[in-house]
Length: 143
Image (cartoon, rainbow, N blue to C red; front, side):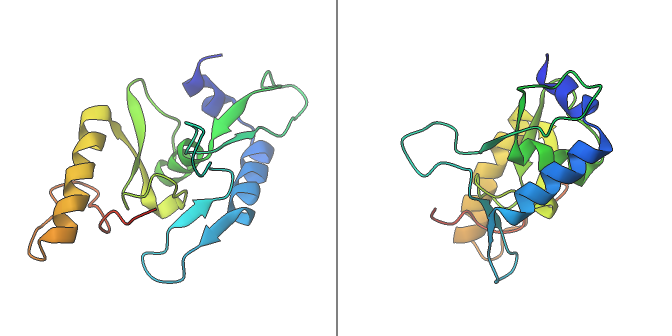
């Protein structure tokens, strides 16, 4: 099953269960803008820094054994749509382990990559203005 189709095929029950699971398994920063670090995300060794979680099964779906990336799932909630071909889940905060819905957005790979420079400039130059829409929300911090 193609990845984009997985997000389109989720039932309301599965969406609710995944959202609850993600929100319950995050370390939530108390200082603004308050990234939510998904505890399923690895801390070294593995290349799966974004964290995957199994989809709760519902009768009548073909999603058995499938997983979703937490950041991509939250981008779907943030934008109200599943990913289109070429979409990447962009972290507006610059923190690759963040899964806070307000920090996620779908955009093309090239645009997503320009955010890396933007977060560096935001951290180094106080007068720098982010050119992105939606705008980057803070400099990349050490993780």
